[in-house]
Amino acid sequence: MVARSTYFENITLLVIFLNAFWIWIDTDYNTAVTPNDTEFGFVLGENLFCVYFFMEWLIRFMSFKVKRNCFRDSWMVFDSCLVAAMVSETWVMPIMVALFFPATNGTDMGDASILRMMRLLRLTRMARMVRLLRAVPELMTMVRGVVASARSVFLAGILLVALMFVFGIAMRQLSAGSGLGDELFPSVPEAMITLLIDGVFLDEFGFVLRAVGAQSYLTAFVFMCFICLAALTVMNMLIGVVCELVSAVAAREKEERTINMVKEKVSAVMKRVDDDGDGLISKGEFLKMVQEADCVDALTSVGVDVPGLMDIMDMIFLHGDAIQTDSDGEPVLTYDVFIETVYNLRGSNGASVKDVVDLRKFVHQGFGRLEEMVRPFLSALWPTSENGKLELAEDASTDARLRRLEGKVSRILELLESQQMVGTTRTRL
Image 1: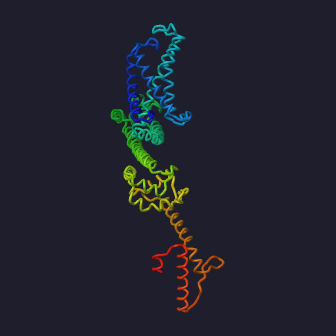
Image 2: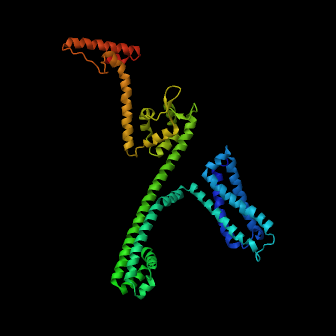
Image 3: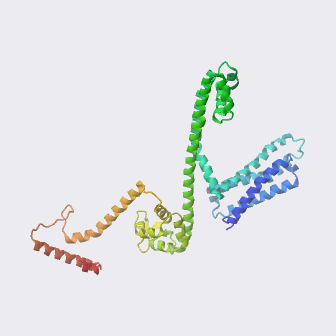
């Protein structure tokens, strides 16, 4: 209960923020060389943070029913590494210093100089800020956008390097033997660096352009061509590509968050209406679910037309994904298949090739079931040949045809009566 509590999660995020500020204060004002020389206030602060993070990790670890499942939780593994580093720095390292460096002080460090490197372990605590990604989904969207655009940025960098290499050779040759060339373009690598700083990043390109133009108009024209290709074309094209990728990632992230929200709400309603507790959804249980306000609000929030959904309920439960039937012989769907099917039936979704194929499959299955239902009646009315085709008697007499028709209607009525399908059907016939 504590590990899943929202208050516990929010308190942990607050402590992470405070710990980040504490690292800043400790870095600026803690002048002690070794842990044993640290002032009491800093020692107290370090131990309080270490105790909280260790207890937070212990609560989450104890919440696992099967302890080995904690290795399947990536966040648990991540926090375990950070807690281990923090415990080693706060509690283990002072003991090691007291045992192996008893005479170490700020003026005579001796072999304890390695302790300065050990203090860098506290930088690993800043990695806890990554946990904010779980609390703020927009940050996760930005991070995934950076990851998705990494390939485009890398390819744009390769293109810029190629342009700088070509124009670096040109600028080196055009400015050879001049004072400006010896200053800005003394070699091809130096020319590429100048083009990167002043031509791509546009640091002081006005000064460089005027200086190059004063020497040679041709050199200035070549430099302007590089700026147009690198800064104005490649860099702006990269901005457009990155914006498109981030927009696609944001749309996908929003879609996933919406689906997860709907799944949580519908799952809570399903647990209340699942009478047999089999985890499967039947038509009757679905009718109970749409009577719950939480379920209707969740489906409506993602653009699902609930009344329209009930109109096509028979089609949903006759879908090929119905894996089995319940005790009453009704088709049932798994929870994930049901959510995916309902979510795909939103009015805002466009029809895809898969939807057309599924429709053809559904119509074909419907005709197959209809043919199976009608086949007994056709077999009783008309004989079949050896190849399964119907044989129709050829008789030009109208009276004979009417007599045969009366006989066939009588036989249909007998079949309907035997299957208790009488009523208005007899009147129609």
